Amino acid sequence: MSEKAFFDTNILFYLYSVDEPDKQAVSRRAVRGYSCPTVSTQILNELANTLHRKMQVEWNTVDAVLQEIDHAFHVETVTVPVIRKACAIAERYRYSYYDSAVLASALLCGATLLISEDMHHGQFIEDQLQIVNPFITT
Image 1 (cartoon, rainbow, N blue to C red):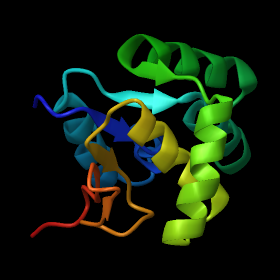
Image 2: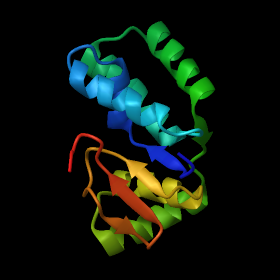
Image 3: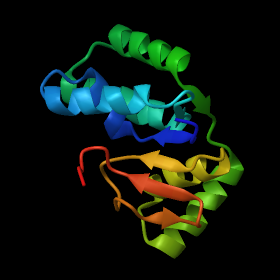
Image 4: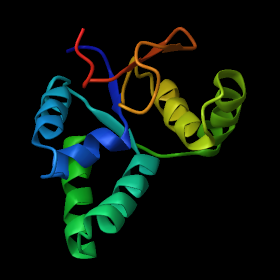
């Protein structure tokens, strides 16, 4: 697809989770559906923590996962403008700060879609970014 898609941590987590094969398959299809899937350094931080804490993945394996994602995704750096935008989004849309930082990163890199299972499916943020839950079939 030609739209720029930004991926939330949960979608990347399912790529590596063997406990939920259906969600893994949906996540793989979602990522493969875009020519330039994008994440932020925040997503990589959250993924590293989740893989180690929830799945007891050893740190050297976490590092290999991060390297794999770094090669397969465009990675946006969380900057001061992203942090400031996150504060404004949190105030306006009432998302948590961390969800707002994901939204801010997606907006500031020009994404039109945020692929996430944790936010309001179908919602538009600033008339630019639509939240899409790939696990909802309509």
